[in-house]
View 1 (cartoon, rainbow, N blue to C red):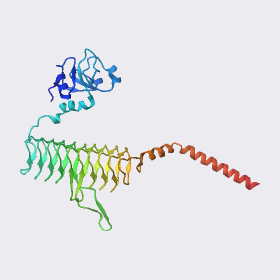
View 2 (cartoon, one colour):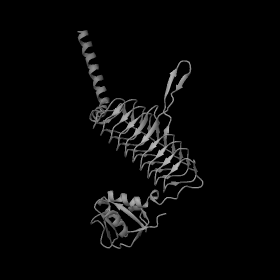
View 3 (tube, rainbow, N blue to C red):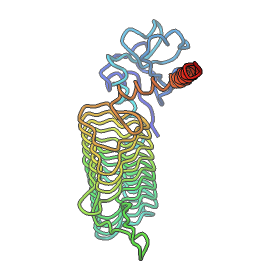
View 4 (spheres, rainbow, N blue to C red):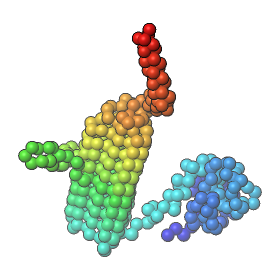
Length: 345
C-alpha cells in the first residue's frame, strides 16, 4: 500500500508548484465530485471550477487554485498526471522475489529483481529479464523470452517460443502464442487442421489488453511493433503484422496474414479481412470492415469500409430513401395515368 506523498513532493515530481499548505499528505487520487480528505482531484476544464466544493485539494492548471485552498498547479496537468498516477500504481512498487508457491523450472533463467507471484508457472528454458513482474497464476511456456521491466498480469498464458520485448504489459487472461485458426476442407476427412509451428514476437512497449489473444504464425512469426497498444477483447490472427505506435481498440479483429501499418488507429469492433493491408497513419472508424487494401494516411469507415467522406455521403443519402421511393412511385403512377389517357384517346 502507498504510505502517501506531500503536496511539496508532488510538485517536485511533476515540476509544478504547491499552493496553500505544502505539508498536506495525499494517499489517493479521486475525481472532484468524490473527493475525501487525503485525496487529490485532477481538474483541467475551467468550467467545472465553480462546482468544486471548498476544501478540495486540486491538481490543476496554474492560477486556478483559489486563495486559501491547497493543491498543486502544473503547466499541463493532463500530462503531469501520468507521473502522479505512476507513483500510486502498485505495479511500480518494490518486487517481492520468487514466491515459494510458484513453479519455476530448474533451467529457467530468472534475472535479478524479478517478482513471481503465487501460482505462477514458468516452464523449461524460459528467460525473464530484470525488473519484470509475473503475477498470480500466469503460465509461461517453454523457451519463451520476456524482456526487462515487463508486467505479466494474473491468468496470462504465453505459449512456447514467444519473444516479448522490454516494458511490455500483458493484462489479465490474455493469451499470446496460441494456435492460429487454420483448417483445410477435405472430402474424405472433413476439416483438416493445419499445424501452426511459428511464433509470436512483441517488440518493446507493446501492451495487450485483458482477454485478448495473439495467435502464433503457421510458420514464421506474428509480429506486433514497438509501443503498439491493443485493447481488451481483441483478436490478432496468425501471421499478422502490426506496425509500431498503433492503437487497436476493444472487440476488434485481424484475420490471418493481414497487415496493419504504423501509427494506425482502429476503432472499436473494427475488423480486417484475410491478407488485407492498412497503410501507415490510417484511421479505421469503429465497426468498420476492411476487406481490401487501404492506402496510407486514409480515413475509412463503414461496412464494407470505404473512404470516410464517401461513407458519410452515402449515410446521409439513406435518410432520403423513403421520400425518394415515394417520389418514384408518384412519377410511375402519373406516367401510367398519362399512358392510359393517350391509349383511350
